[in-house]
Structures are given as structure tokens and as C-alpha cells.
Image (cartoon, rainbow, N blue to C red; front, top):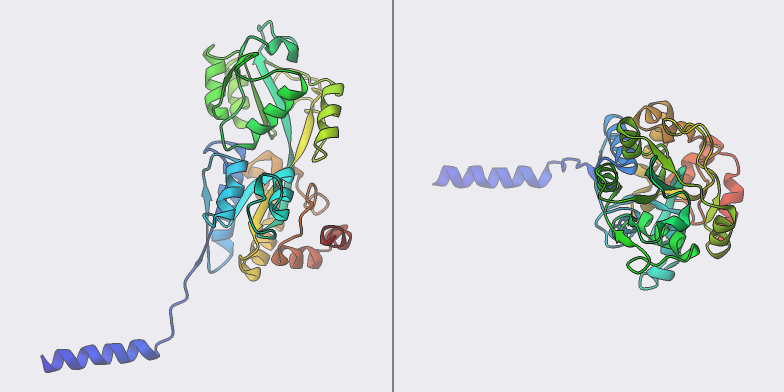
Length: 327
């Protein structure tokens, strides 16, 4: 017993003077349902950071989407997340749907390629324009995702009310792709980063059409919601789509909590920006990311760690951005 007591005391003594083992900092990135573009991005970033930045363990989190990500960040459930420029600015200010939260908790990090509004039908469908959606079965995205809110804004602009003028299905993009292919719905709407993997899958097995969104409709939406911007779906985004399709866009952004360590954000930003060629192999949207585009769509200030790297890298317009978002 005496020997055991001495050993125990010795262990306690050694523990008291031994240096604490360094622990990794865990950072979760909220994305959208597994298999969609933002999840691929988050997984690609996490893998890149984990292989190149010491002391950080980053993970991609499958979530219900961009709306859910902002709430998860505000609730300290995740440290970073993909969203859109409209939600990002409201969350930073504590306005709109976020009037119940303290401002300044969520900051800008990286801007990715903008998201583009899609309205998809089968090639042989008799739905030729948006007005033909009346009386049909239409997928509009899952609750908690920004695409569902975008669909509701588009539907309001064309005078259609879900549940009254047509039957709405509130499910994710992967489910809508399967349902359209199987004839369970007649059309679906999704606002996402191109090209969308489920639509690529759909075109590999079916002939589809993407409906044009008339200019007067997109102009009305942009007048009411300035966060949206002009921009068509480019030609050849998908198989058998030789022409550009009239549409509109929304800034697609990666956000991060203000309380994440500055050095971690600096090193993560540096690693991603200096490996954009690799990120383009993760998803084609990253092939359009550059120092010239990384601030696009943001109206909220940058995290200090990201700002430090962008200044070092000489990102065009960085000081003008700082002045604008400070005001």
C-alpha cells in the first residue's frame, strides 16, 4: 500500500509539472445535404486543411442547407458555413430573420461562384414557361435551405402560391432529381452553384429542359431584393444545353464565426487560396474562384484572419472593401 501511495503521489507530481499536450482545434463547416455541391466544397476544404495546417481538425457537416447553417453558427453548433449574401448580411447586422441575435457574430470569409436559379422539366413536358407550372406538381427545395426561400420569391413574382395554385414538394435536390426522373413531380426549382451534380446525373439518363426566367420577372425580383444580381445560366453548363438560359443569381459565400482564432483562419485562408487548382478538381465552381472574385457578394466585414491574408496577397480592392463594410 505504501509503495502504491508513493507511486500515485509521484504521478500526480509529474502531472503537475509536465507541459500540457497540445490539442487540435476543431472547426466544422456547415454545407447542405450530402452529395450536393456545398458538401463537396466543405469536404474538399476540410481535407486540404487537415493535410496542410497543423493543430486543426476540420470537418464537413451535412446540413439542411444555407438557412440552417446560419442558425447553427449563431447557436455555436458549427464554426463556419456556406450561405448566401442576403442571409449573411442580415445575420451580421442582426436584422430580418435574425433580429433576435446579437450583431457581429458572423463574418465574411470567402466568396465562391454565384448560385444560379434553375427551373427544370423533362424535355417532353408540355410545361413551356413559368406560367405553365399552375396546377402541376413542383419541387421547391427542403425546409431550412435557402433554395426553398428563393423558389418562394420566384413564385411570388409570377403570381403562384404553393398549395393553392400548384402542389408543392419540399424536399432536397437529390430527391427532386429522382422524383422528376420517376414521374412523381412535373418540375423542380433550385438555386445552386453550377454545375449541379444531381442535374448532371439527371441529364446522363434523361433529356431535360431548363425554363427561361423572363427579364421582367428577374428585374422585379432584383428591385425588391437587391442581393440578387443579373446573370444567365451559361451555355453548355449541362449536356444538350447549347444556349444560355435567362436567369438571375445570388452571391454564394462561406461565413465564419467571429470568435474563431485569427491564426487558424489566416492559415486556412492561405492554404485554400494557394491551392485553388486542387479545389477545382473537387468541384468546377472553384475553377472560377480567384483573388479577383474572392470578395464578391459580401456586404459584411471580413474575419481578421482572412483580412490579414488578403492584404498580404494584395487582393484587388481589399482596402475599398474594408472601408465599405466598416460603414
